[in-house]
Amino acid sequence: MPVLLLTNDDGVHASGLLALAEALAELGDAYVLAPEREQSACGHALTLHRPLRVERLGERRFAVNGTPSDCVNLGVLGLLPERPVLVVSGVNHGSNLGDDVTYSGTVSAAMEGTLLGVPSIAVSLAEGGDLAEAARVARRVAMRVLVEGLPRKTLLNVNVPAGTPRGIRLTRLGHRVYSERIVEQTDPRGRTHYWLGGGEAQWEDLEGSDMGAVHEGYVSVTPLHLDLTNHRALAQLADWPTRLAPRPGGAPGRPRPPRG
Ligand code: MN
Image (cartoon, rainbow, N blue to C red; front, top):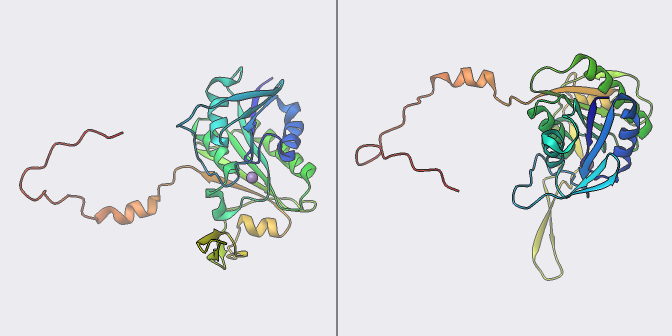
């Protein structure tokens, strides 16, 4: 049986991850390697300044004192009996749509898998949605990816709506608009502090966006490309001057050795 690597950012005990593991069990040897506690909105962080510890919770279930991307690194680079053929991250509690994917630990885990050359999928479920439904969708998408593979440097970001999905739509990332900026408050000692993410989120009405699809009750499947280069801008910037002015006082110095 091929080895599958499952992870998430809600922590190893999250019900979304358990549902995912059950749904994918028949597709291969599904190993769960996930953060020991919730890491939502940790983005693509890696733990490089302290040791990672792995605790075995079951035959194919492990908790890591790190981030989702740590888990994917450990799993793909040698902790599992074989290199996984697929990384699936989720099922996240709450959707990961539009610009929000850049904060998402769930999506970042799939990015990490992709960077390491393993086809990867991120699956998220809208608030109030049905986990069994999301797990079913995850299995369908995973089967398809196992058969067809994915284009280079490309992962699938899957979002499942609340209720029974009306179908699947292939989408592009939407654009979120935050109506409020920051919430400023004063603590009992008279010091000021701030809260981010206080305002109600709205989205731009973009044709074919993931947000639109989920809003209308469809599963959105967005292929995300990890080459962040803006190739059109590269062409536009072609006539920028690229020669640097000489240093004041004569010949350029030797390049400095890299620091720390
Ligand atoms: Mn999460």
